[in-house]
Every structure is written in C-alpha cells, then in structure tokens.
Amino acid sequence: MVDRPKKPTSLNPSSRSSGPQPTVDITDDRVTATLPTGESVSILLYGATVISWKTASGQENLWVSEKAALDGSKPVRGGIPIVFPVFGPPPKEGPTSKLPQHGFARSTRGKSGGDESVKLDFGLYSAGLDESVKSKWPYEFGLVYSVTLGREGLMTVLNVRNEGEQAWEFQMLLHTYLRVDDITKTTISGLGSATYIDKVLNATTHTQSTPTLSITSEVDRVYTGLKQDTTSVLADGKPRLDVVRDNLEDTVVWNPWREKANAMGDFAPKDGYKQMVCVEVGSVAGWQRLEPGETFEGE
Ligand SMILES: O=P(O)(O)OC[C@H]1O[C@H](O)[C@H](O)[C@@H](O)[C@@H]1O
Image 1 (spheres, rainbow, N blue to C red):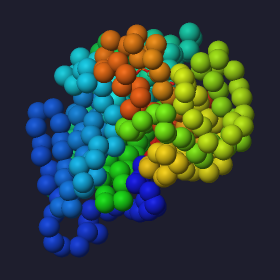
Image 2 (image 1 turned 90 degrees about the horizontal axis):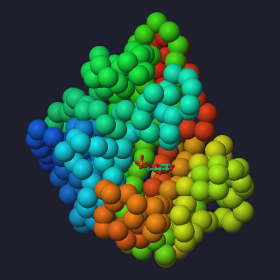
Image 3 (image 1 turned 120 degrees about the horizontal axis):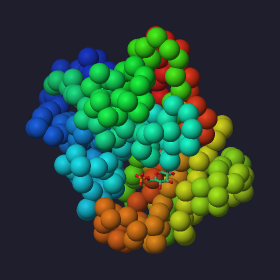
C-alpha cells in the first residue's frame, strides 16, 4: 500500500544510509516503529494485526473501530487482520470446514522478531497453535508476516510454508480497513472491466461496467483476475492511496453500510462506515495448494 503518486520500492533496512534511525517501541501487546521523518506503524502481537499507519504529518491511513477489541478476545474490527487459511465462512466439507470465519491467523498471537529496524517480522507456526485449533486444521505450516514501513508506503507480505509431509490448500487475505474522510466522496479505480463475485447478491458473478466504483450502499465484492496490480482509492477524484498486489490475484472491496455496521457489536461509531472502506488483497476465489516444503508469498 503506498501513498500516491510514488511507486513502492524495496525497503531493505540494511541498505539505509547512516543517519537518524527509526525508533521501535515494544510493549507486551504491540510493536510501534517510527521513522525519523515521522511516519509510524503499530502492530498488535495478537494476530500480528497492523492497527495504525500514520504519515509524517500524523494522518492516520487505517480505520479501526472505536469498539475494536485490542485485548486478544476477538479479531480486530479494523486495521489489517490476516485471513488464513480460509476466507469467509468455511466450506461445509473439506479440511477447513471446522474453522471459524476467515480462519485462525487473525486471532492467534504472533511472535515479533523485530529489532531496531523498520521491517518487522511476525511468525505463526502450527506448533504455536492451541490444541483446539490444531485439531480442526491439523497441518504443519509456517507463516511469516513482514510489515515494512517506508516513507513511500507500507508493505505487508505474508509468506506461507508447508512444513509437513502432506500437501494442503489455503486461502489468504490482508483484510485492510482504509480510513477515508467521507465515503460519499470516495471512489475506487483500477477495477474496470473486471469480473467480480457479488456477496451481497448471493455470490453471483458480474462484470464491473464503470471505470470507478462509488460506494452508496453495502458493497462486498471479490474481484478476480484483475489485469492491473494497482487499485486506487480516490478522494474527491484525487488519488489518495494505492493498494498494490504482488503475486495475489484477488481484491475484495467491502463496506458494510448502515445496517450491517449496526449489527456488528464491535463496530463503532455506528456511522463509522462513512469513514472506511476495505480494499483487501489476497487469494480467495480459489485455493492455493502447497506441496511439502513449498512456499507461497503474497504482498
Ligand atoms: O466480520 P468479519 O468476520 O471480520 O468479516 C468482515 C467481512 O470480511 C470480508 O470483507 C468479507 O468479504 C465480508 O463478507 C465480511 O463481512
């Protein structure tokens, strides 16, 4: 995800020039990194959920519900929860059928390998799962989630590895809640002519007919097979944020609108749907299969 108009670059902390260094503050439940120029990112260890991303001027780019549970009692309503290994309600049958909606990664505490750098890695391994979760999805995996803050943007990468002896399938998504000033003045571009599954209309398939999408009611769409890698959020027609996919074929756009927001106990304020839109990159329309020892990386 990058602030327009610059393109993301590789942000290798070791290639930074000498000079003022970022500060990293680690507490029991979160890690906050701040660049000398003022940009900052906060990641909750619970689910390795990014809960804040601010520009140098202090502008918050992510939306987090005022009633979001940040104490590990439930997935965070906002920020960037990680969806793994299943998106949405699990299928009735098959290996992911016993899992909760969106899988378990967003509700499992990760471990930070962060040091004095702007790239923070969080690990989640099958060995670290509670027995109750393991029994529902008994595969050996390693997830490494890297969050890199740079002046040009925030890069979030999920690396998934099959550490077992049998193949398995998964879905993954970086469920990003973006903060916008006014949803009525927000449009989304980069989806033109794409095919999408409309979850509001009984998961029927449609083609995006307009070059930009305005959000005037509940929207819950899975865009598949997008040609371009960038989906842009515009405010008053002007570029605000680019969400860039790498090695991920799907983009979900979600805004619960009034009634659904009202029905979610942890969604606050109730009119908060006017200040957010989820633009989520992932691999969710089909399944990714990993043979033993194989790795998948989505960014
Ligand atoms: O309420 P949650 O389990 O966090 O899911 C929140 C939303 O996630 C995605 O955006 C899905 O496309 C929606 O259908 C779902 O309602």
